[in-house]
Image (tube, rainbow, N blue to C red; front, side, top):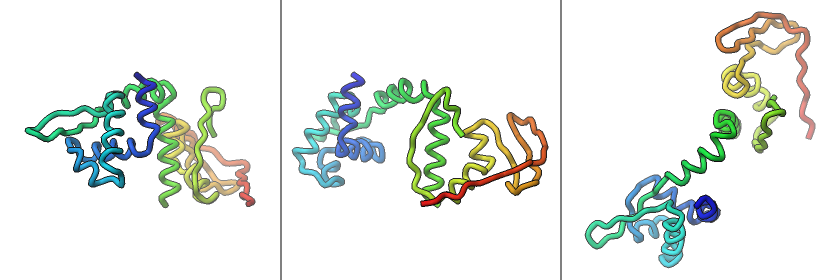
Length: 174
């Protein structure tokens, strides 16, 4: 069944249908067609694939056939493929990407690759901000990041003070 779900999710038109149902559940075929730039026949075919993958269920209200999002298969994929691979790290990385586009990992366990469209300055700011460090790395370093400045290492509420010997930043060269 997982293969059918992945196949169904592979098409952008079907993902649009799921987004529409997620926004407002219980829509008729006509309502769904009105929101998408697709022919009625195409929407019907996409809905059939989504129903086959158990991502959409239907019910009747009089003569109207209503379509409903069934998020259970997506949740099963999340539990199988994301929870097992450190969901919190994935969320933190997604938050970092979102924060940097809108305005050191442990290589021995997992490697995540994501592309963030931002400036080196914004990236440095996010990586040195205690809230991001705490969430992603499990600890935070509070400092002004100048040579000779003091810093506070905060891990699980335990704090240690110190003086930085040397802070260096590399300038990104394009």
